[in-house]
Length: 338
Picture 1 (cartoon, rainbow, N blue to C red):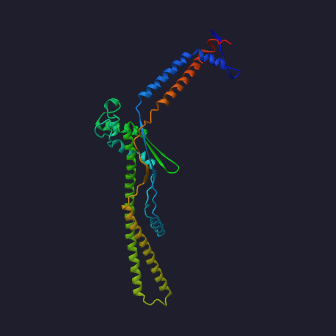
Picture 2: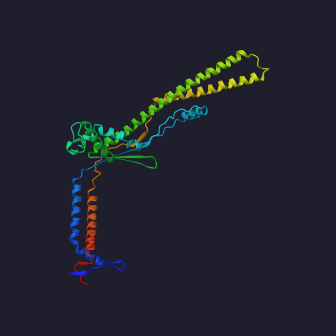
Picture 3: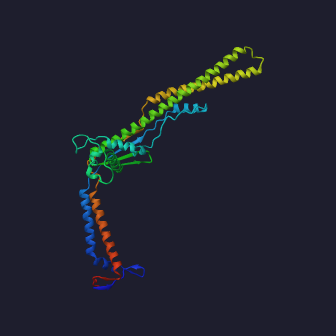
């Protein structure tokens, strides 16, 4: 029957009137809640299960105190050698396009294929049916770029890197097969070490070449200073009675001593640079390697169903109140016997 129902009276919500409105629209609420819940259940059942593998590592800190001291001594003499260590932010290396491109093109052992395949084939991205016909000219080069772009986007969503305040780095990889997930996580460590070692080798080589070049320059200056001292002594055998000649001798001796000290410092640096060039120190140290997971990480079916029921109920209640608002204050409800 028709009643004049006012949910808000005197700036306060009338719970009895609110209940009457919701009760009158119970069929709508149940219908909406059921549709959203069933949709959530279907998604939970049909969604591809993903397995997570985690590898943890610490950045390796290797500081050669002797070399740093020698570089400090060299800078006092005006010699600015290249820095020995190249610092990397490991999460940036892992999230880089270079590393993730290597991951998608590397062939992995899977249970779906008899032989190792790359991730483009594993995900079926190179299936022509998945590419819009009018999206671009489907030449071989364009198709490869399209597949690579799609795989990189998917790979970025599957890898997460977290760095704690202590410096511990957690790398999580989600894949359709637990074995593939573990393979990728462990490969990331090897790739990071390889990348940083190659960069360190190149930097160390440049450092050694710079020191060697500077050493040759100082050697020429030292020889010139020694020759000047030799010529001065050969021309001035008696300088005791000449303060001017004594001062000139002291200046020449000082020049030779300074250049000799610089040369010795550079020689020490050069030997250490040669050692540093052939020494391979990993940039990170593995704390826990990745292993295949026996439990799937997603989808969480219980959570999906719970959220679907809650969301459906919320949408149903909101829709019923919205319908009441647009229909005006006159509303058909069933009176509750008092």
